[in-house]
Image (cartoon, rainbow, N blue to C red; front, side):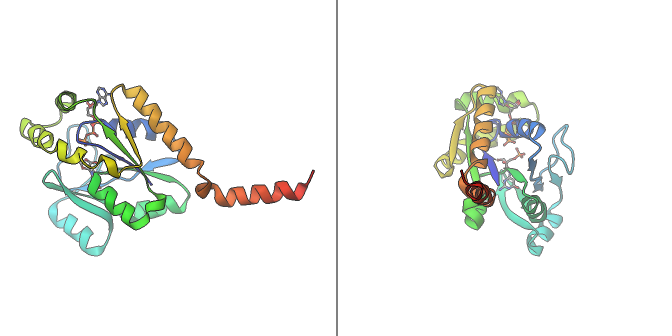
Length: 203
Ligand SMILES: Nc1ncnc2c1ncn2[C@@H]1O[C@H](COP(=O)(O)OP(=O)(O)OP(=O)(O)O)[C@@H](O)[C@H]1O
Ligand SMILES: Nc1nc2c(ncn2[C@@H]2O[C@H](COP(=O)(O)O)[C@@H](O)[C@H]2O)c(=O)[nH]1
């Protein structure tokens, strides 16, 4: 479970899209949300856009692995697609906030790799939110007013990157994925067989 988090506008969704486009071994956990779609966002692809009643239903039936109130709306991770991906040995990428990260880690901390993406500066963060051109002035002001509080959670993450130059940051994310996939704990059964067969062959 590979988590990308950041204050709103730092660039995690853009990073996630690039990773998902180039890496067939990782898929996106498509969240459910009560916020409305932005221009260009597709239901079922970017989010499952649902109303409050439907979200209540997901919470009550236990269909969400985690959920949280973020910027006045609700967002949550459907449980079943995560279980399905993990059962097929696939990695899964989460674009979720610090509350969701805490909940995922509380469930299964050893299989969660978390990355926090910082902006180069607050003015640059605001510039990115504006240049995205998807949010109203009110939404931008609200998200900027919460940026410091969001950023205060950076120390809870395994890796912390500064997204100044996009390609440099993307490359750092690729490196983290590559190294984490090579962790002994994640290759244990393969390595056990490999070492057993190698030793059985002798000199
Ligand atoms: N390194 C960068 N330099 C300049 N612009 C960037 C950089 N990284 C991302 N951006 C731009 O910043 C804007 C915000 O990026 P993005 O939507 O990926 O942020 P986010 O962290 O996912 O935000 P949110 O939490 O609101 O979904 C986009 O227009 C994106 O193209
Ligand atoms: N805890 C969760 N947070 C989520 C989830 N899906 C998205 N998010 C976070 O919400 C904010 C706002 O997202 P936006 O698309 O409206 O800009 C951002 O920090 C996301 O990472 C989720 O399922 N759970």
